[in-house]
Image (cartoon, rainbow, N blue to C red; front, top):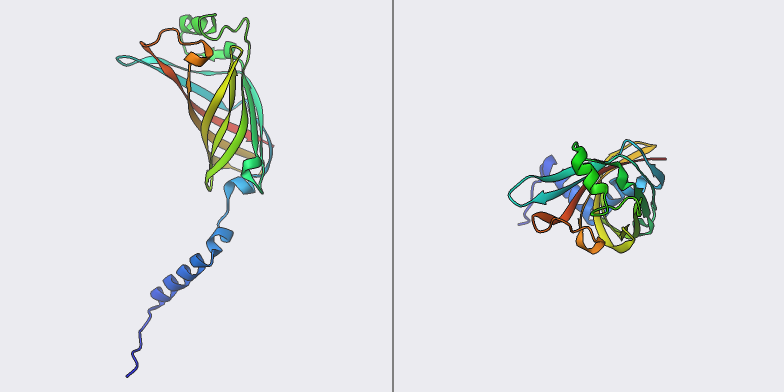
Length: 198
């Protein structure tokens, strides 16, 4: 005797959804924020470039930079062909304490008199999710250039604007800025909000 399996409307919907998944349809249906945001953007002054350096026993130094510029281009067909270039002025460092700011600007750390800019240029971008990517590149500070890596994710997007949260860690010592170690960490943590406008 043939056996008939009764399918509820719910089961039918689930089965249809599974079939669509296997056919790869959701990938076409779901929007890819990075691909849809293709274009060239200027980094807006409203962006925030924050950093922190931990201290043994707690505390440390935290602040941001008030002056910077940069552009990034998102290739909608191949994210790997996207690129970023960014420059900040270390003289614009802000910590809320004039004594600390003057020390950071001195030749012990940034040496802004001889090296007025810190720059980053991407060498490769790898998409890690629908709205996230890993950015590999080179960072130049105090005349020294070293590899650097950041993780970026889209936090907001409109037709003409896109906002990324960008995080990464940079060692101070390769750039000759390791004064104060080991009391102060050799690691500088960056937590940035980059707002791009077309």
